[in-house]
Length: 236
Image 1 (cartoon, rainbow, N blue to C red):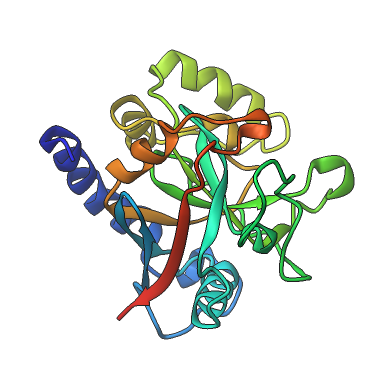
Image 2: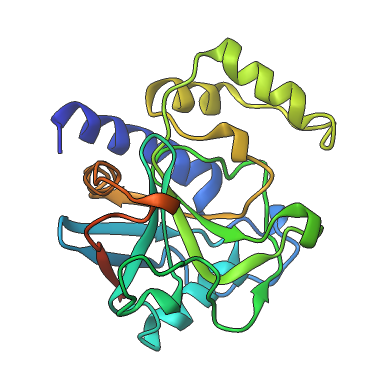
């Protein structure tokens, strides 16, 4: 990992912990368990990513850990990779899938109620739940297993203001904080996904692994030409 990027992640992480990823009972109307600051490690051929799971999204946190404990994610693929956007995995049909097979529709047989929050934004390294499109999923329910990790790019404050104005159409009270504006300018991300998908974690170590995955050449449908397997375990 480049030292400058490492310092950026570590420097902004303290801010993120204080603002969004620590348990906030007042900001969440769902019951939050006593287990705080739980982490998972995503193993890949490029190295490991350590992910902090948000206590403010307990349904997604607990579901992710449940599937992890069951071995659901063992040897699945990052089946959809888009440089400058995100890397996606969690489709159980990707395990041992033949080359050229269409992937991305599999899951555990259930969805998860959305836990979308204005203070959980799509900065680089954000762990978010994939979902079906709005026209068949008006409640923005999340896939029971598929997730993506944000790659993204940096945005100037003026560009971010444009996204903010669009979000205000459905969320009149929404506005980016100064800290969030700085995160998108310094670290980058995908702000056009904010308030549309549930962000439930953040890569805190190994963020350079995202770049390695995103750099792989892909075939039609954005599936890597060479399979990228991963497995997940809870970090005790």
